[in-house]
Image 1 (cartoon, rainbow, N blue to C red):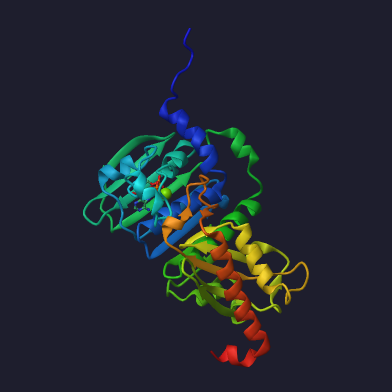
Image 2: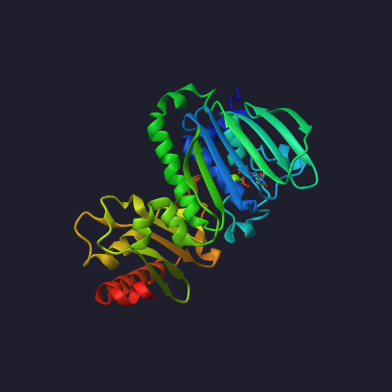
Length: 337
Ligand code: ADP
Ligand code: MG
């Protein structure tokens, strides 16, 4: 007797959601990345009960047409890549066409969106469009995800305290704001505003909004370049360090990634100056031809593979070492630069 069946789409989406939607912060990540990809210059995030009750994201990006607004929730539906060739030159944060389908599979979603011509309002429950109607709106998208994990009780039970969940989201939004200084971010938990950036485009100003002015004042710029990679950013001098690596942010082509080798290269570059067990606060931006990077390694897109890694690490070491050494030897000169 044949026993194999192809899963129906709602079941497949729920399984995929297990990878993409780990906790409220992962939903915020996917939604904000969509807002960034849509060219927004202002993104507001409002959470109730750390996002477990609701997550609302309002942006002023391109918005969607009525057909796209409904198609967006289908699995593998994306406007960002068309063919295999595109997979090797990804410049957007998203490309898998999976996030909205996965999020909608484990929560209730209400979407307003307008492409500047027509506005649409859509309700989705358990991954299915329940209602949709025309709505008068300014251009942009406003999406509310509520009752997260309402139909996956085991995952809901696994959620930690409100404090832990909100901590994950604050950390995430901080990094997204740092990665995009030209976008004005606002993160609120109920009535409490947790982060607000101006969108002025000035990275040092965002670092001041995120880590405080005392830290930003102690940060020095660095840069280095070789045939394949361009590296730049800001790092604190050894007198301003932290006991954890959580303040080290690596951006590759504008994407926040977790890179053990890059962190290690930074620490090697500073090791003669750093007290044991202390880590700098750093934002390191690396730019390369997208062809040299492979983002399609993990559904969260937080781990990436880079070709010519040795070249990247050499640029990191060179840039950071030269800047820190110079600031320590001639501190007055660098502060005036
Ligand atoms: P991906 O981002 O990988 O394409 P998603 O499931 O996150 O997949 O989104 C599906 C599509 O919905 C996107 O490709 C985009 O066209 C559209 N979309 C989602 N969010 C927004 C938004 N905030 N503004 C405009 N378009 C959006
Ligand atoms: Mg996306």
